[in-house]
Amino acid sequence: MNAIDLEVIYQSTLQIARELTVNMLRTGYSTIIKESQDFTFAIFDGEGRMVAQGIPQPLHIGPLAAQVKEIIRRYRGKIEPGDAFIVNHPYQACQNHATDVTVISPVFADSRLVGFIGNIAHKPDLGGKVPGTNSGDATDLFQEGLLIPPLKILRQGELNTDLEAMICANTRTPEITWGDVKAQVNTNTYGLGKFAELFNKHGVDRVLACWQRWMDICEAELRREIAKVPDGRYGPETDYLDDDGVDLAKPHRISASLEVKGDTLNFILDSDAQARGPINLRPCVSRNFIECLVKMIFIPKLPVNDGLSRPVRVTYPPEGSLLNPRFPAPVNMYVRPSQVTTSVIMRVLARALPGRVPAPGSAAGGSLSSAGRHPASGRWYSQYEILNGGTGARPDGDGVSAMDELVVNVMNTPVEAIETEFPVRVERYELARDSGGAGRFRGGLGVRRQWRMLADETSVNLRMDRFKFSSPGIFGAKPAQVSKAVLNPGDAKERALTSKIAGLRLHQGDLLSVEFAGGGGWGDPLERDPERVREDVARDYVSPACARDVYGVVLTPDRDIDVSATAQLRREKSSS
Image (cartoon, rainbow, N blue to C red):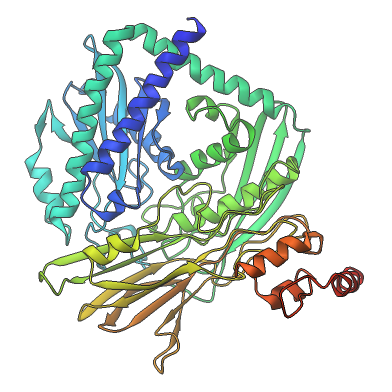
């Protein structure tokens, strides 16, 4: 196949995945779809190997790949044109957590099964012990909502109405939840037509050959880059989760090492035993986002497909561990250990490739869900928001503020959308001063957001972390500031909250404030350009006290740099 056809066919495949993403964005019902964009589309070949993805959400790619393979295994010989499958079970077919629901549609050409379209989309409520489903203190999988093994939701184009009735009977928001499921099914069906056009234009065998060739290209290019890294073992690096939401005094360890040998990478993961609470992480989820991290560092301009999997191995601790839990351990807070795992992976990669890898991000991005009866309509609502810390500093620049981890690619929910749809008022939404880790290059800042409750009663869930262990910097940088949540700040009823809250009852007029940690810094903060420190103070990113005490930069009352005092202070700090 010549280079032009190779590029045209593959770019056409990528465009279909992107077009499906836009279609879902326009047809989804919930704000978690329309605004946060917490969903992913990916294309697979007939053997279940990933070919292409739409707007990437790395935490979804591993489950999608595992689910396609499980459907092939379970339904071999019984997959027909017009079928579609639905699944959300974290153990039977590897799902992140039960509120992520997958729809997979087989692609046929000339009566041959040649591929699959898969998508995962989060649901604002799917039953469970608390409104919003995901409980920060769940102690087994069955408290985490409706569980769906791989089942047919379409049979040769006909909707399984019994399955529709079951899903709607197990959610507090049936119209919204089922509306999102319909959008997933219909968007996949639309995609089948686009692939029929692609096959008719270029020929089935040429399209399949192009897909295979691109997997081989990505594998070869990744191996070429890995081979440039000196052989050896790097690490271990260790980080901690605050707690599991059940035992609030016990932190949970995650560690990683990297073994480089020739043109292969082997990440060796370790962790404490699986938690009673819902911070456990299935291996099929973490493997693929680790591959995505490798791609971002080694071959950022090439696409994500199955070729990336071949030079990368991941070794896990034994079953019964936090990173390899045993059924029915709860998993609804899987994003928190994913982010901490990302932190240790980035740190071992930074050891292997100094000067090419950013500091770890905040690992503090978290979710807030609230639910109750809307005072205007009397109907049940379920609000779900995902909020961000900051990214880690880069070897040549500061981190990005109000942006999530490398493996979490979701959007913030605009204030206007929240206040239009739900009985809350957002009273503050801003960057949190001093939240980024100090360094030669500063970590990105986290956000502060405050919600005033307008309904008579609201049930709130917090699923967060980094209240105790903030993101560490690298190469001499300082750790980031920790996150915090406060109920009714500045009021006589002020109360500090823990990072994981389930079913907190709030009343009309209560104010909830959450401040997210920033990303880690890169390099010694005493080496930061004083002018950049002055600019940070002027923009209110850094306080004058932090400028002096951490960066060793003295400012005059007019906020100019006192050059001689700064030089003296930095000499004193360097020698101490």
